[in-house]
Length: 220
Picture 1 (cartoon, rainbow, N blue to C red):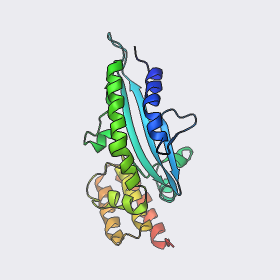
Picture 2: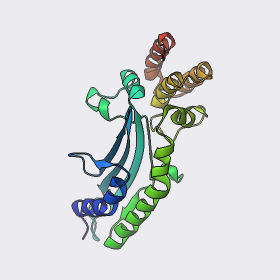
Picture 3: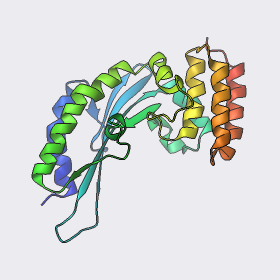
Picture 4: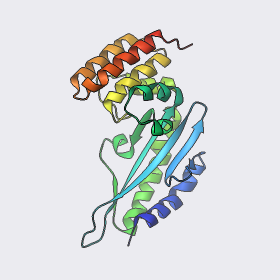
């Protein structure tokens, strides 16, 4: 019968070589968290395992595959204006998405109960890594690419930043750093979005303070 530990071990066996060949390393003391550092940030893959309460047929397990990119300078500014605790500053991502979001099934997770189901899930994840996840990270690990992902359609929810209030914060930072010619338009668009959100009342003072900082700050 499957348990969390042997699921972890099998996942590592199936994906370790795939990711190590691309320069990713499992983080020390963080099973199934892989990182690849580059100048000014990192790429990552994260596999999260959760379980159901025990039933007559045993436990079901869910595996979620997430991946993303951190641009250090974006996070160093953004973390000052969000609710992220300082202990987590070094681990925040600029963009973070998941298998489910990339296949337009936002809450999708792999459900496994048997060895056969786990083998099938591992095959699907390896196929996704090779054909979608890794190419996505290779293409979207610089400010210019991330600016397009986050800021091309500010009126639409982003599948690359889960918290849409933080998307407003990071969107204007990224636009400023990339010297986006639509910076002023974007600041107004994100201010309007925050006004419509229930949590926007809390974030608005932080957002306006950030704009003051960015308008006085020179990218060069």
